[in-house]
Length: 317
Image (cartoon, rainbow, N blue to C red; front, side):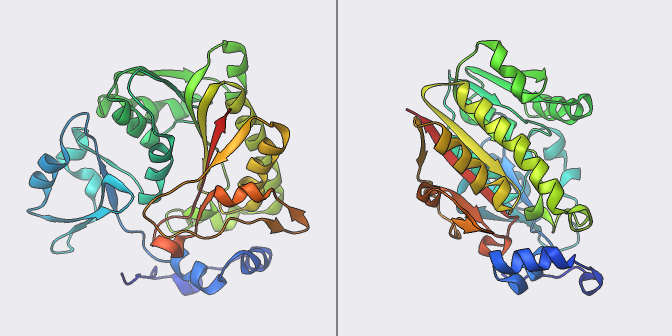
């Protein structure tokens, strides 16, 4: 599929340190070209309210739908006459029949594999894309705790859970680390951690301007706290998914490396999906990471013409 660059792509300036860093991590020209091109619109059918077949029948008169290979409910969507891009204005969106969600963002709940009647925690849930996907896979059975840490983030989370008919979700407002005191043990936990968002430049150009190495180091400290808290809340044989839309090794491989080196009962599982992936980073700026990190999933924007993403599947044995 041909990529379409932003109209002002040539005018966008990357910081020299950013270019230097990302030239070491990947093919800089490819990464830059994809990061400065339009992102294909994608949706996830909400099977709590409608079947995939029914939604396709409603939309296919005016919209072309192409199935996303790794998500059977996910579709890239494009107007048949290329006259519209405002998918979020469709009545089917307002009714909660689908969620406007980036294709790579659908991966963490798929890998988590939540089941009906389980107790599941989404530690950083807002705005609710992955939370509603988890509720969908649970078929609204069991308990899903959807947590976030600021009042402002509660608003989109509660609206989206209501719109999508997620009736098994309990919303909580607290720092993720506070869950230690709850005494609850979870079957499955998603830690979709707050991050620098360097995989989402094509959706949020401001990321280029705010990026700096100090911010990455600070985020990495918080992310290590969150992944450790999540792991300690798991039942034996429970599963934790750690994910970010960052491409920084300090926010991804280093965080997982920290956990599996500290806890002998933290084991990484392979992630097998129908997509193109790149090797995880095992060595960067004089840091060497555990060989088990090879089991993590690292996706650059140029791999599948999506956002960049990182996912690790950790089991407590």
